[in-house]
Length: 428
Ligand code: AMP
Ligand code: GLY
Image (spheres, rainbow, N blue to C red):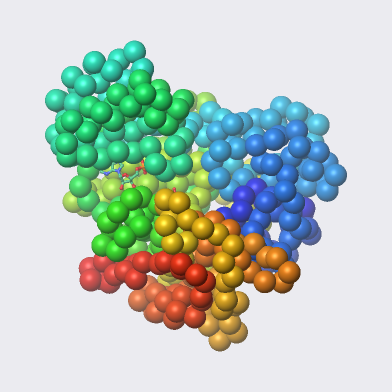
């Protein structure tokens, strides 16, 4: 098969790395890719949001399958576009617009969960004409207040504050002040859930599903989970505090009702569902849905899958998902993100990176995110630069391998958290 992979982060590098093992793969094309992906496929700068341009590329290169890495093209309707165009036979891994609304609108997702009795924090939702009602409603919630912009906000649209004044100001800035633009014209206020976060992932065709390894990511920039939110500074898989009992509850109370809910609501779905969960006591609650894989979670999830990823995608698109045999590796994986100094705020790029090559006797893979190659040298090109994945018998072994490699990688202003996984090692 000829595959076009859309995206250029660590998640897509991990996907390209895994796809390239497949015996079913003929040519892999990646748009736009990054400095770590040159040996894995043909890179192109076609814009994933420009669907007619993607279509021209698909025709020219006889692409059979498009794998969509991030949410933006899905929410904008790339899967609908290729189904409706009917002119190509290309299959798309990723839901159509309506299914992608599980991520594209918090209000839609909350109403969906409510309708299908899926455990989630109590909520209320308000539009830009309802600022006064929203402020009054704050009194029915206990602090800390959780306020979310309804639409896509690149992971920045959630404000959690103890201060009622800040909560009121946040509501006003979203509903009236244009914060988060269209995404903030509607807000969701919800109950704060105290617990431990964990991410679960399925691949589903709306009927059958396979559960991928679970993961925990470390979202804050600072050690001890302090400072601003980032895309993710590291991840581990498996998550030691996820008992069999908890996973069974998540399956029965959340995963199966979500898939059945899609069917009941007549929402077709072919792709990943990412369940951002909170473990409160011993019970799972949904914090958010995403319609794609996580980054950096993918950099620990895919190294734990033994079976052929392209075969999984092919089964998904041809109605044979239930016959696919998903084999998971018992070994653990961890990834430590190396970022540019200043991230998630302003940062400089174009610093040479040394020591990022894979090593023959090292159990791990250096996935690239914000990198580029120029005259055979590697340079920084983004906030998150590398995701250094280690593997081992336990999470602790995996982490030792990640950190041993991180110590050898040098670029000016390199920043990484030294405490990825430290919390779960204490718990285990
Ligand atoms: P989201 O973009 O919805 O994943 O939210 C970003 C982060 O905010 C989550 O990863 C949680 O750490 C936190 N968060 C979101 N909703 C809640 C909630 N209801 N209670 C506690 N923390 C939350
Ligand atoms: N790492 C969180 C996400 O991909 O949304």
